Image 1 (cartoon, helix red, strand yellow):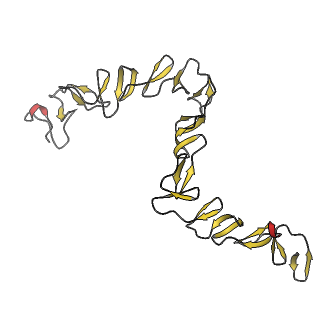
Image 2 (cartoon, rainbow, N blue to C red; image 1 turned 90 degrees about the vertical axis):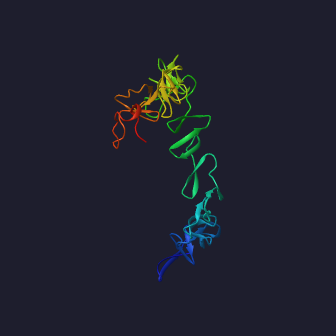
Image 3 (cartoon, one colour; image 1 turned 120 degrees about the horizontal axis):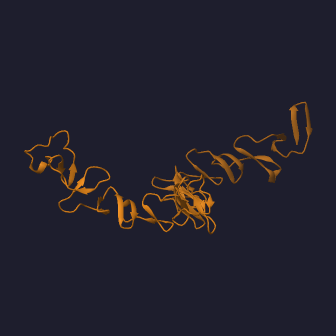
Length: 265
């Protein structure tokens, strides 16, 4: 094969880069690839490939709407479906999440996720901490919540939470008992024991250290957060249904002519 500097001056060499006609060149033109099986002759890429590294590995599709996956160009999926492993599916399978027109695998150790940084469940070798899967600690060690990356430590004299976290104080929704963080009763956002709630969820009301779905007869939901059940002093406050308010809305003024100090409807 010849190497060309000028038409009058050339010599024969062994070409191991790319061959076009009788000349050895640095690389094939766009849309062609150097084929080692034919002594590096430049050959055209497959018809749907704009750029390729060989006859089976496309690196850029000729149709910009096509999906490039593992060296192959696939047509775009129809509405309501997404691309996964060479086919169109209605939902991404477990262990992956949707990104644009395709499915992408979750992070290592994550079995279900909504993004690479938001895992919802981990495999049996990992622990889920703040939406990330961390390698499970060996026996006798727990993840330290005070340190970056939640390293595994011996949790001596501190509180255990969910069997793999080490806390100084239990998070909201839990209370300390025997070195562990125990779940509060239903609808309790904070508590000191299984029978003593100190605050409730937005759908419940606190009465006698319990979270109730509604106040007992004769008691009303107090306006201040966290909501509690109490008696409404109608001389200084107003009733709006089952809610005891400091005053009616700006449109109305509570007056003696309103029965029991109710806000007008």
